[in-house]
Image (cartoon, rainbow, N blue to C red; front, side, top):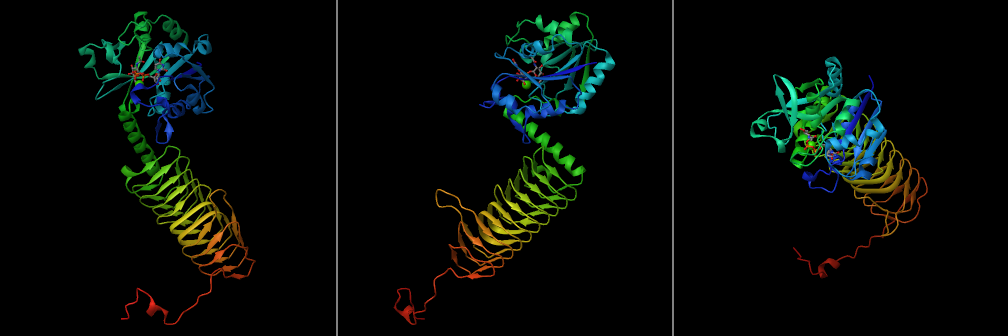
Length: 458
Ligand code: UD1
Ligand code: CA
């Protein structure tokens, strides 16, 4: 049987009180829509269509490659109307169409696969996914008669008795494709919201003696529909628990999972230890046997094996095996620390490459530089890379020794094995094997202290 998937993502999401279209709000670093699309990817569907409307351009831009088609719903007249917009693409096809909503970030591919299997086994015209909600407010209620589904009633249209029902419509259903479009064409907006409800298709099928089945989802979490930011936070929390549990079961130690914020796309190798209060964002990849201590924040960075990040911020950087940074280091975008590099406390690195075994232990700024291997930076070194308008690059060759308090006025080159005397201001290139003194000579005026105002003579 051919399968099609329709994902509804045209609504504004008024209750989010946001300029961003609702489905682009993120849960664990990925938009809700991306989560939903990812869950559908396990299904071998002939067509996967997204209905867009509000914020159309941004929503279309965000679509992953697996979505081949989208249609625009210019006016949001309800979920039934939204599905009808796909008629041009799907209307003439035989098969089963699954409709899902873009605001259900917690739905899993396992559930979607199970629903297709259930639908096939039941040989039903429509199969809906329902769930038992502790607080059903806002969801469509499942009205059953003698155990069989009769219809779905929306919160705003429900009687007090119907509102007392806890079995709710998750929003996901599978329909015989031809019958679906036939029913959609006959919908009327005669309800409290004046909308064309997809959910009315169920009542129409039952009235026409078509078989409607319902699969009850054990885990209500998955059915969460995010309409406001309170629900967004609930989704975030559940997603975080899921991500953290999966990582722990794969061999990563999380010392305090409740305070560890890891985005969905982050990868971490076994035996790595993550302390509490750590945030790992974006496409970060961390190898095996690493240690990330409390308070660290790592974004879109790649860490190889045995890397230590101690209470530091790492953004768009690479840390190769055995390298470490912190406590209180800041690796800004474009930093590459090769193997066994040590970047210590209060060191900032930006757009710079540090070769194998190079060390910058304390209070140093390395910006826009190419640094060779086993270079030593003394405390308080500053690469002066910016004149207020332009940025300049410096090069420091292998085994160089940059004395404490050196200021390198970029662009300069420090040759191999060269040394800059502590406190130097280096404005010219230093040839290899040379020692550069770039500081004023000291003069001692004997006895002059006695004439100075501060002098106490004790
Ligand atoms: C909907 C269901 C309700 C279900 C709940 C589950 C209907 C009528 N109601 O209610 O039974 O319990 O989801 O979370 O279907 N959308 C469009 N175009 C429109 C309207 C909506 O694309 O014209 C999209 C929205 O972007 C959203 C999804 O459809 O992603 C659901 O719409 P929403 O307004 O959130 O429906 P609910 O009131 O939550
Ligand atoms: Ca919703």
